[in-house]
Amino acid sequence: MKILVTGATGYIGKRIIPLLVNEGHDVVCAVRDTLRADKSYFEEKHIDIVEADFLNPETLTTIPKDIDVVYYLIHSMSNTSKDFESLEEQCAINFKTYIETTHAKQVIYLSGITNDEKLSKHLRSRKNVENALASKHYALTTFKAGIIVGSGSSSFEIIRDLVEKLPVMIAPKWLNTKSQPLAVRDVLTFLSKAKGKQELYNQSYDIFGPEILTYKDMLLQFAGIRKLKRHIITVPVMTPKLSSYWLYFVTSTSYKLASTLVDSMGVEIIGKPSNINDIIGITPITYKEAVELAFEKIEQNSIISSWKDSMVSSGRLKDSIHKYINVPKYGCFKDYKERKVIDEAKTINKIWSIGGTTGWYYGTFLWKIRGYLDKLFGGIGLRRGRTHQTELNIGDALDFWRVIYADKSQKKLLLYAEMKLPGEAWLEFKIEDNLLKQTATFRPRGLGGRLYWYSVLPFHGFIFKGMINQLVKVN
Image 1 (tube, rainbow, N blue to C red):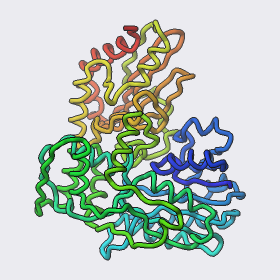
Image 2: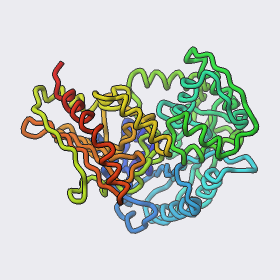
Image 3: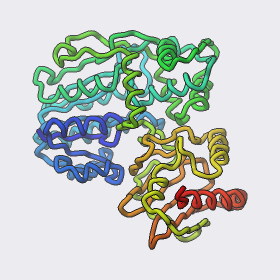
């Protein structure tokens, strides 16, 4: 088949694309920004990349007409604007209008379980999108999942942060809300096996794991797997705002995402039974098994996708990466240093391993202090870390930076700051003429930006000097 995957840079999209290719299908990946597409896709003959923004109908003509099946995986948990629901609905309408002009026979949509009478804004939006996608020109297959558990998923990482950092948790009462968590591998099985299956045409199914668990149950089971003794005390006095701040300060999530999650966590996510498991031929695994599999992936350093790398976790970068890749030259402050490279391969490997658990090679404790200050003032801090220990791709989160250019063959890495700043900042590493050129660029905003630059200048002096010295050091 020729299959279109929308949301191709998202958590599920990045995982289903290799599955479809391995099955022998031709895959068309629709992305808002081609820079964010996995660079390996450009080398795969069975993958085509097209740039399309479903909020801008004029851009959709890049999508070929001769497609058979489409995966609709577009959703933004971080959007908290007042017109969020109408934007989601308009996106679905634009998608439907164009797909109806193609040869597509089936659209497969991954939604959320929406059985509770009182739905959160985001679950209500997903329900509206399902209605908007219904068509007489193609068959719609909808799968509704609750909490998805897997390496790099937002629920997994947030629970991991809470369990590993807090021996005793004084937590909001929504920890007693029930849900049916589902392993990401099972989600992918449902999605991949549904294509072309006519008995699923124009049908909607809840998909869920075999257990009904509260969030408290999940935290305690997670702690048991990690061999950690944890105590949880739930209190009824935490307002949604206090709950959001609690998640925000303890975990690596942004405040916007924390607020969205808190809004959804008061809703019970219990699926309606059906025969879908028999139709697909699947027996979903337990929560415990899903967590253990996730840790296997982490230990093997083989996490395919992470919610942290999506723009959901972005602190500042909301627009196309293209807009930020050209570092400004005028009206900026710069810290430029260069050193002779002794072992080019070793230096490049060090650059590509920077941040996360590796640290910043020099003055890492000062980077951590900067991260704590950023978190205190509503930023994302350092706790996002990085998805891979030795690989970087455009769009990846890297502590409080975002990778906007990464090409080992060109010997260049460019980062854009997503921390709270009175201006904009870039950090570039580039090897030319056997020299490592390290440039920190800051474009200030107003007097506050200029005062900020001069206040941190003394620290930059030895932090950046120490960092470049370590990057070229051979032992």
